[in-house]
Length: 176
Image 1 (cartoon, rainbow, N blue to C red):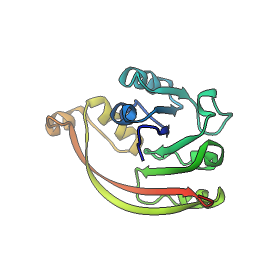
Image 2: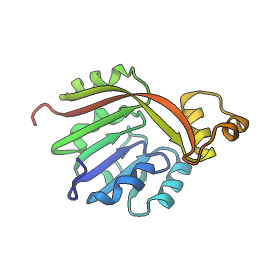
Image 3: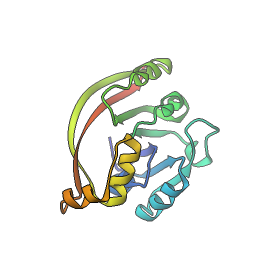
Image 4: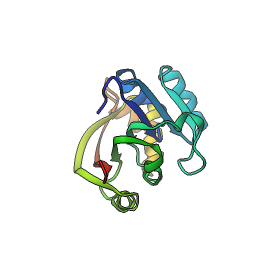
């Protein structure tokens, strides 16, 4: 999906790790988040990408008004699904990678905007939080306690290891 000519929109980009990792493989990577502090970090981490402050619900920022070939939500914002008809180029694909296995509103919202699920997976991944700040933010997001002592006792050269269950969906417009 990440072709050199693809225009990608990332929903809920956080501090920009996906833009950093994948953004230079596509024509344009545009991402948004509603947290200004995360966007500041994202702009430093991935200066080649475009980052916008947006909540996914209000009027579209100007940078998001051209159609996208790939729309990604990797951290769970599902409100973007309701905006797919106005954001997607013909033949566009939507990739959702949620932080939990059960996210019923994904299928419901895709149906509401006449998109169909092409593939669906439930997976368990071994992941790493590379820095203490990433580990702390993950704990906040997942509503899990974290402590500096646990970090220091468990951190590896790759970061703090943890297992995460994820719900993954690939979807397309019904007409494509």
